[in-house]
Length: 112
Image (tube, rainbow, N blue to C red; front, side, top):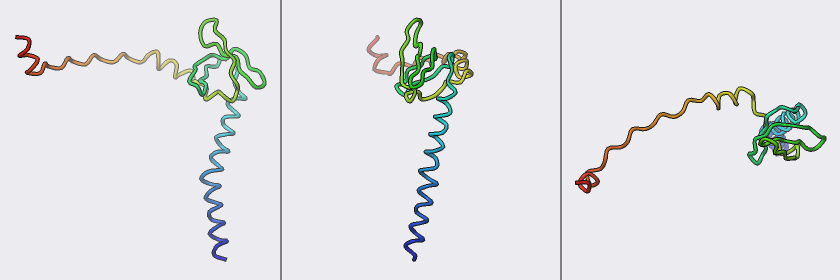
């Protein structure tokens, strides 16, 4: 009887820690793929950024550069890039130049 209770508790933990989060993630991915439309910027699982040109049943046509189009499988789309992420990358300030390190005593002696 105790074994059955322990086994049932293990099954509940497996469901809560593994199966349920996977189903949630799968549903989010399916919803994201279902709402793709021309003009969306996406990232593929291979790391290619592109703009959606055309959506077919099982594939997406992307423009990755001016007049360069490729087709990828819908399941290869990792995420849609939010419009505000594009702006923040463009408006990011340039890093400041680091001050030059002072020369070491050996280098200073070699210069003389």
